[in-house]
Image (cartoon, rainbow, N blue to C red; front, side, top):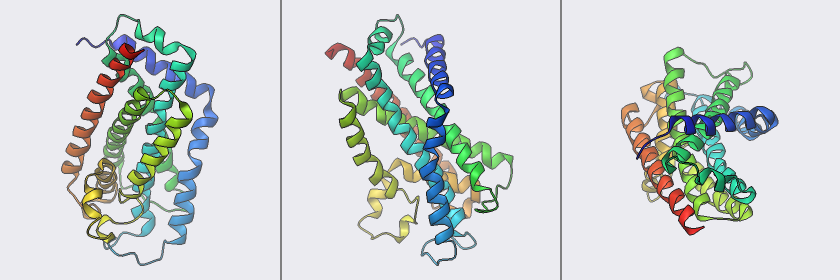
Length: 260
């Protein structure tokens, strides 16, 4: 299957122009993560929470989780653009273009992940403000963290495309995505350590790809002692899941054309 880099670029550029023309969308998406950081981080900053590694305070533990939450929420809702394009006929025009469906999916993923990663970087930057006090130890951890942000974003944009390819109703899409997102978020260890959960719930958390994304962010930003798994294991799990999501999303995206 041939990949058209020009098609990928055009779809990416379309998303960038849409973001530039609606900058309030990006700023508004930062509201909930900042509230989580401020109220949970400051409110529980001096609390003794079982399972948090020694030498790591709650705001340090929470920040990678909130970055993961930002990636999850913005990425999953990127799939709604497919439904908008179906509604207004743009998707039909894209489908008849002489490019592979994989190129179309990759273009959408590239645009959506760029927006999501920009939001994640902004959350990381805001967390370093004196009020919150998260400390970045160097440039390399930030670069590695951006790599994990990209993988998390690709994973859940792919999942959002899977849902969007099977649905036609935007309201129904929002309801289904919210129903899926919050368990993924709450069972990822973003707000509290996985090991502090009841034993019967821990395997469910380990089956959650966001668990490894958040753990990887902690490993690269706070050091190996702050993560439950090795950074390499986190990377390979999220990388493998992201490839799987892209493949399934591409297949379902192509079958959507046939059905219509």
